[in-house]
Length: 254
Length: 370
Image 1 (cartoon, rainbow over the protein chains, first blue to last red):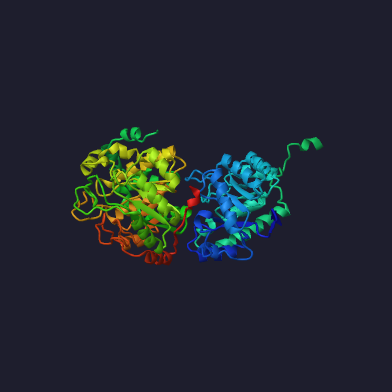
Image 2: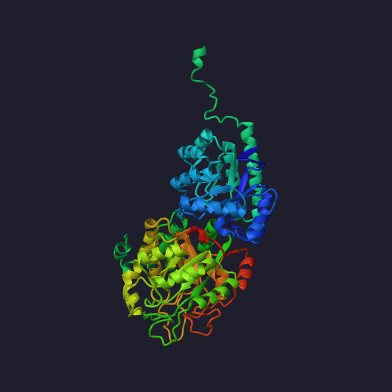
């Protein structure tokens, strides 16, 4: 089972709360997904209110909230946001999102590393959203990150695992769990990430914007389970060449 | 400071217009099929040739919008602080030569208006004024921001163009977004519609988004007033402007509006009429060109149009708006800047959105971020 900090997860599907057509639909889809870690944007909720509509719909014993810093532009703002979240939501977990580029929402590696160092020192469990950069992942490990969350493709793009070659290197080298965070558009791509050895995936847009979000949530749940099972079962090696009927080296045995 | 002027000056209005109207069905089809669309593709999408492809454009626009923004709609409301104005603008109710009683809200009055706005459920407010630099100046804005900041998570402003240092001074007070519409990119026409006042300086206005970008504002809103000139050519220049700004101030977000000229007492008749069909075309074209840009629609538009347009690319709308200072409670009968068309309350708009499967978003920012 997957362990991050002191928490054990039975589900390797992490989810988000944006883009749903209602809070009720979000709740139904997230419950159906079996997800135990759900990220919520601080900018979208009123953390000072007991009556916030999004938060009210996330009150399930198996759902852990993962506040994210979406909207901040640098390490300083991120640290400040994390501290407010810790106080209001009573969790020291923080999904660090620093994407100063509002067009593709690509993460700033320099500010993310700085913020991770600082937040880890302050006792946070840091889950940073980053580019699929293997060297940055090692730097974040040294800085005390709990996991790394490399992107498959830009947030919300549904383009799948465009960074597959680099994700493989990250998975090979990482000492902390690897969660593929962004760009997964279909259950088959989530299954693929788990087959590659990713410890979990985070999916939001592909569920929220689906024609039937609840059914899509179930599809992702099954795909993630299948991908993990396949990884644990060890995939058969893929052959690049067929067995030749007249081997070129057969003369050696003659 | 970087400036859009050099790029703008390298284009000729007449040539751009000619090239838009020369676009063919083949150009439109190429634009629709392109994975990344160029400014030439945008021209094709706003051209008369694209009207035959409107349904296809709408389908694509809906898909792209939902992918990026989900099934959500941001809600905001204007708060008119003042109708004092030293400019003559031929299309505006607050124009200097329009004989109306002038009013700038006091601190106490602002808080009365804020209470009414909060009671409607709003968390995002747009502050609006005319241009009266003697009374409605940076110090006044600072005082207003200080007063209202505890009550809103997102504060936008649509006031006279300011200097970089002024914007830099206002941002720490909670200013998040500034809207500055060029009105028209047609210089001769601009001169005719703005004969007097600081606003008559075309290039000072044109460079305002640059000054905002330089100051590090979070979001800039652009647009033209549709009805002054050929909307296709004006919209091309808007897109050109946005293209330049995105590359130059890459940390800034952008939104676009497309206000159609509305009647007001003693006002100007639109020179160019834009039909509903054409406005749909423009909205879809903007979305097909810019997947990420926010598209906003105000209460200028009719109930029926707004009910239908929300699914086609719009990401923000206002509701229950008053366009006069004190319009909510202090002085409801004072003269409006323009007549609004959709008079439904925020509660009615919320019900309409939910019925269509859209989640109204009241809060999408937090004052802690500035």
